[in-house]
Image (cartoon, rainbow, N blue to C red; front, side, top):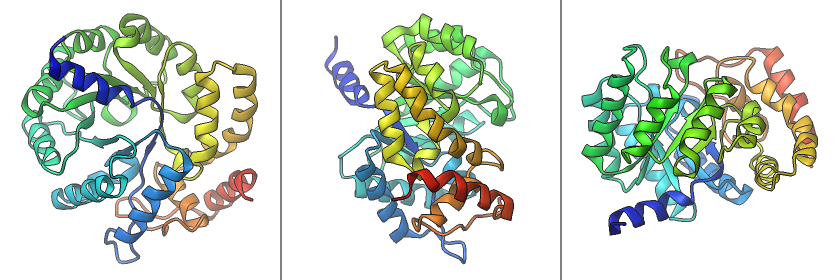
Length: 303
């Protein structure tokens, strides 16, 4: 094994278990709330998140300027200071723009990228392979793919994931297709060569039961400690205990999905005093019913 391959394996081996897809705090006038972001990252580390994912859909990244994206990523990296791995969401439906974004992110010290299949363009599987291959070759960074057909209108098939793993293009996969048969087939094909993460909090138990490495979660924004405990139980394969813990978490998972993510989870973070419930259009504040449901879901986690 070449030295750079050994280094890459060492870097990515820590990306397992609970990853939090970070929300981005805004002020009431729509600016990034840098102080809240620093406090929030500390809250996640203290809560036990194994790694953090910045600039995902939960972070309202599509509403951030290029400069804001780099600044947010830089602030997360600065605050983390190497204590846990940081993965940067890096998605675009133009391969050239994707590569340019990855290169910008590399300038602030990021080592790991998470990239969804190209949205809107709906490329063939060969186009998807070339898209991810270009990102890896141009940036030299560790790349994880992200399958989420509900947002991209495209799927990444198991044989495509297998090829990307065999070529050394990707080290991981966030899988949010909702198709457990597909996820099981991916895990069967790639084994330990690729870390497969649930991209849906409520699917974490079945995904890990068929060989998944953890979850990149939304609910852990609000309750990282409870989510870490649950994921650790799943790692131990103590499924009876994990089902008991899931019973407490399910109302929170449900509340997080009653409106478009991250509208409900930001309401939860506001209720917990972690950041304001401020959004950038086209996202708007939640309904009163959503806030009430979230309040009820949070009760078991309040001291």
